[in-house]
Amino acid sequence: MNKKTVGVLDLRVFFPYRLAVLEQRVGYATSRHYQHDFDLNRTDWRVVATLAMFDSISATDICEFTHMTKMQISRAIARLKEKNLVVQAVSEIDHRATQLSLSGEGRKIYLRIVPRVLAEEQAILNHLSAVERGQLFKILGKLEHGLA
Image 1 (tube, rainbow, N blue to C red):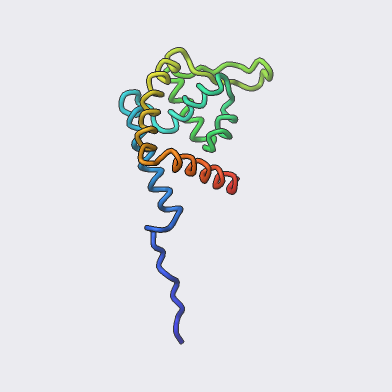
Image 2: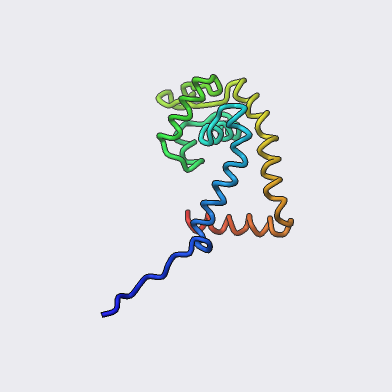
């Protein structure tokens, strides 16, 4: 009796693999702008960037917005509070909850990092034409919507 063999998965054309490799490369290219000079890891940076967007937000809302786990966000908040980049205060609406925001120093660091990561994003996207960029963002939106 002959065994049926499953075809070999060619990672060179397997979408999840290619996307993961691209994410690693893009992540590395941008992380060097906040890791070395500011001693922030990727999760720390995402929390800082989220706090800059929303001014004041709960840890739960950060988890939901970034699609990261409670443990990841909790550890990042602890590191950022230790570095005096984040402040935590009791919510004015619900006194049982706390809200997080950037400290003055956190905002200064954020403002120093943003031009660097935006320049890196531009350097990466410069490999595409304006039309291709539009197509890329449209396709990303479709995939995100399809997986939501």
